[in-house]
Image 1 (tube, helix red, strand yellow):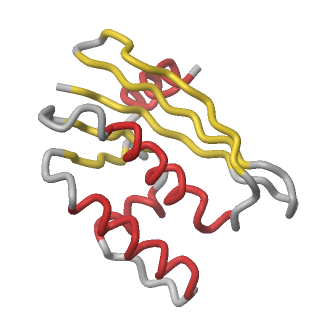
Image 2 (image 1 turned 135 degrees about the horizontal axis):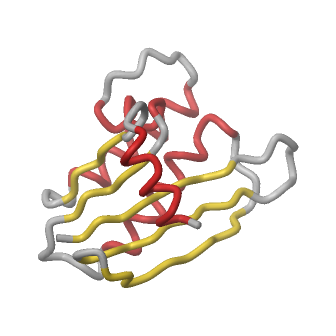
Length: 127
C-alpha cells in the first residue's frame, strides 16, 4: 500500500510562487519526495492544484492501493463534493479535481485535521 502526504502553501501576494510538497511512501519506505514551485494561483484553489499535481505523480503506481493524507478540511470538502462555496473558480476546480480522482478507483483521500498522532507523522513525512 502506498501512502502519499501532501501540503500546499499559498502565497499571500499576487505574483509570488506557491509551494507544493509531497512525499510518497510504500510500507514506511520513501519512494519519492519533492517540493514544487508553481506560478501564483488564487489561495482558494491552491490545495486542489496541489492534489492534481500529486495525482499526476501517482500515475506511476496504477495497480497499487493509495491513500493521500492531507491536512486541509476545505480541500477534503471539495474532494467529497460537500462544499457550499459559491466561488465560481473554486467550483470549477472542484469539478476538475473530482473528475481526476474518479479516474483512479484505488485512491483514497484522508483528512487528518484533529488527529494529533497522524498530524505529527504527516509533518515528519513532509519535513
